[in-house]
Length: 428
RNA sequence: GUGGGUGUAGCUCAGCUGGUAGAGUCCAGGAUUGUGAUUCCUGUUGUCGCGGGUUCAAACCCCGUCAUCCACCCCA
Image 1 (cartoon, rainbow, N blue to C red):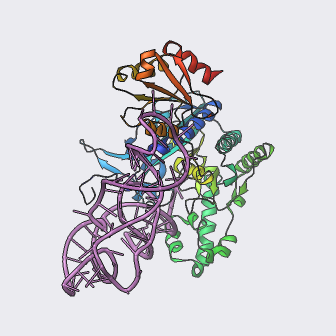
Image 2: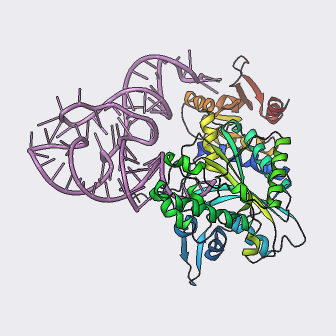
Image 3: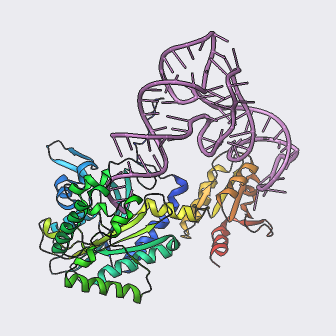
C-alpha cells in the first residue's frame, strides 16, 4: 500500500503492461515453436511445492535455499515453497509419474519463479524462466542439442550477436572432490591474497571464489588449480565430443574453467550464455548435466541434462536492440457517427469475425468527433477504416477508407458485400 | 543484509542563493457543419512520495520513513 492508501504490487514483482505483452507473446511463441520442433513436450507443474523438494535438490547451503525462498507453513503445518527454479519440480514430476520408466523424455516448461532477493537490473522477485530438461540419455549429443536449440532461439530473436557461450566441465564426483581439495590447499597457502568475501567462501563454497569480480584477485585465480586437469577419462571424452559437435555446427564457444553453476546438482558439462549488455546480470541462460539428481530425489538413477532461460533478460536484450518494439496492431477500425447507427455497429464487427478471417477488429465506442475517431484509427495501425454514419445507414452501405494507402480513394461498399470486400483486401 | 542515485501532471522532465509550481507529450474540442500528417487556438490534470523539524515563508535546508533504480552478495 502506498501513502494514499492504494495497494500496489509487491517489491520485485512486476505487471506486464499492454504495450509490452505483445512482445512477450512473440518471444513465448518463438520459443515454444523451437522447443516443439526439436521434439520436446511441455509440462506444467505447480508453483507451490513441498519445501523439502528444493532443500534436497538445490542444496541446503546455497543462497537460493538458505535465504531466498518464499516459504511458509500451510494450514496443516506443512512447509511449502514457491518454486525458485524449474528443474527440481520437473524431476519430481518425472519421478512421480514414472515418465522415465524404460523411456527417454525431452521436456520443456515456461513459468514464473520466485526468489526473495534485492531487485536490480535483470533480477526480480517474481521472474519467468523457460527451460528444457532431457532424461535418460548419457550422450554428449544431448548437451550439444540443447546448445544448438538455444542458439537457434537467439537467432530467431535477433539477439545472437549480443550473446556468448561459455562452457566448462565439472567432471564426476571424484573430480570435484580432488579439485576442491587442491583448491582449498592453494587458497589456504595464499590466504593473504584473498579478500574478505573470499575468506568467507573458503568455508561455504570455495568454487565460488573462482567466479569473483574482484580484479585484485585475477592473478591468484589465473594460477589456481584448473578443474579440467582433474577430469576423469569418461568426462574428458564426453567433453571433447561435446566440443566437436559444437565445432561441426559452427557454434562459437569459450572454455571458462572458472564457470561454476550455483546449484549443487550439476556434474560434467555445464554452460552459460552470457551478455555484456545487461549490467551485472550477465547470464541469460544457464544449464548443464545433472546425472545424480533424479536419484537424490528418490527416483531410479537416470542421466539428465537441461537449461533455463531468464525471459526478462531476453526481453531486455530485445528492447535494447530495437528501439521500436512490436505492438499489437489493429486490422480494421470501425468509425461510427449518428444516433441511429449504434445498433448496427456491433453487427458489422460480428460479421467480420463470423467470416473467420482472423482479423483484429476494433470498434470505436465513444461519441467523439470524426476527426478524433480517425486519429484513433490511425494510431491503432489499422489498414482499413470502416465508416458508418446516418448517410451510409440509410443507403445500406459503409464507407471504406484506406489508411495505409492514402492514394486510393475512399469507396462505398454495400453492407452485404462487406466481408467479401475485406477478405479481398487482406488475402488477395 | 550492505552501499549509492532518484521520487514534481497519465508519461518524459524543468524549477537558480528558500518567496507558495511550469514545459513538452498525451487526451478532448475548434480552425475544417463527417475524414488520420503538419500547423494554430482553447481546455482538463498535481497532498511536489510520506511524516516531522528549522523559518515570517519549504518542491528546495535538516532528520526520519517508504518506494524505486543501480551496484555488492548471489543468480536466470
